Structures are given as structure tokens and as C-alpha cells.
Image (cartoon, rainbow, N blue to C red):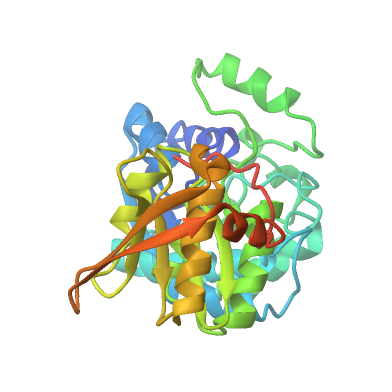
Amino acid sequence: MKALALFSGGLDSILAVKLIKEQGIEVVGVTFVSPFFDASRAQEMSSLLGLPLIIQDITEDLLPLVISPRYGYGQQMNPCLDCRILMFTRAKEIMEREGAQFLIAGEVLGERPLTQNRQALLLTARRAGLEGYVLRPLSALLLPPTVPEEEGWVDRSKLLGIKGRSRKPQMELAKRLGIERYPSPGGGCLLTDPGYAQRLKRLLIHRPQPSRRELELLKYGRHFFLSGCLVVVSRREEENPKILELKREEDLLLSLKNLPGPRTLVIGDPSWEELLRAAALTVRYSKARERERTWVLAVREKPSAEEEILVTRQEVEGVCKIQPEGGASSWKYN
């Protein structure tokens, strides 16, 4: 007997895997990635558990759901129910390929109001074509018996009936199972972050079909839209290499000449006025903002171009009224 587990690397998914493995069932994990969430936590915890892990990118199918979700958003730009249905649908394909008989998930009834109420749990399985084949070990005793339980593949008496948002039952279970290390709850999806969500909303106004690179860039820097151009100014030194990794040869890269400061990426074909504004924004977010005159270097790889732009203090003061899209983000992304 073999089961496929939706595995985020969080405590709930760890416990779900442990409960099923203790019944002598082989378990393979799957985690999904996109610009909004990665596999780092799942990879770390699957390694500790000795759990084989499949990683699959769902960006192409997820983006239309982010733009126009059938079941609506959470508090920010998170189409959680639509996203969950997509993950279950992809998991069904992987089950068939891996020869797994059923799917397990660490969902807890009532833990999350949008995706883990009774109706949502049953809807998710039905829409994915997995009705009766999704086992949720932590809340199974509060839900209708699944095919694995009815067929005797899984002993229902050894499953649990956890309900609600308290983490205490899971923590006590982890202690009994000898699980000493697990990540703290929360985080996981950038679409729930207010700062990222605001920037994404503005990006969709200017770029109704954004590229993956533009979605990745939203994680870093301050974002400004100057007519048809996107201007990204790094917020701290450690963001500079991240922005450089996402730069393309046709982009303009701005930096202070002979002075430390942010890196600024200009995507698009800026007019001279827009380029001057981008240069002034670069100075504004540096220690050179009080200088009377500052030189900014603008470089493009292809077609090859390099230009020195003189920015005055008056021009810096002129862009101070331009606020970054989405404001500050509280997200800490590794």
C-alpha cells in the first residue's frame, strides 16, 4: 500500500505522514512551488523524516487563479481554495504516476476558516476528482470515512479527531511521537503578505499578464511605475544581488558613481525624463540624498549603453512625493 502526502513541511503535514507511516504504509511527499511559495521548509523536514519528496512547479496554472479566482480571495490576494483545488488536481496526476492508492493531507477541521471548514474540505476533494480518496489523519474521526478506511487499508481507530485553531493537540502529539524539531506556524505564501499583495495589485494594473520574473521581483525593493516603465530600487544591501540575478540584458541598471547605495532596475524603454526620475529615486534612497549634486551611472548590456546622469538635490526633492507601490512589506523571504 502506498500513499501520496501533500507535504508543506509544517507540523500538521509532518504529523499526518507519521500517523500513516506508523500503519506500515509507504508514503511519498509532494510539495508545490511558485513565485509565491517555495519548497525550502518541505525539503528540510522531508530530509529529517526520510520522506521521498516530489517538487512540482504550478506557476503556469496558478497565475490565472490569482488574477481571477472562482472562489474569491482571503484577506489579501490569496485565492486559497482555488489554489488548494489546483494542488489536489496535480496530486491526483502524481498519484497515478507513482502508483499511490490514496492521498493524505495535514488539514485540520476548523483550523483555517476559508479552506478547512467541512464544506471546503469535501469540495476540494470532489473538484479534484478525488472524492473518497483524500484522508486527513488529524481530523478523520470528524469527517466521513474515506475509501482507505472503508477498505481496511488504514485503521480508522488509530486516526484522530482534532478540531479548531489551537496548536496544543498537535504539539502534544509531536511530543508523543518523538518529533522534537518542526517549524513555527505561519508564513508560507507571499500572497497573504499585505505589502506584496498591494504591489501585485498595482503590477496587474500595468501588466495584466505579468511574467514570472516580475512576480519574483515583487519580493525585493521598492517598486515604482513611471508611465510604461517599472522601476525597482533595492531597500537594503542584501537585496542588491537578488535584483542583479533577475536583471536581463535589455534592462537598465542604475547605481551611484563612486558611492555606496542601492541598485535600481529599470524595466521598459524609459524617456529621458523617466530615466532622470529613476536616477533621482536611486539617490533619494541613499546617504547621498542631502548632497547638492550626485552622479548616477546607468548601464545596459544589450544594446550596449552607458550613461552618467547628474542628479541635483532639487530633483531628489522632486521625487520625494512619489511613494512606492504597496508600501513596506513585513515579509521575510529566504
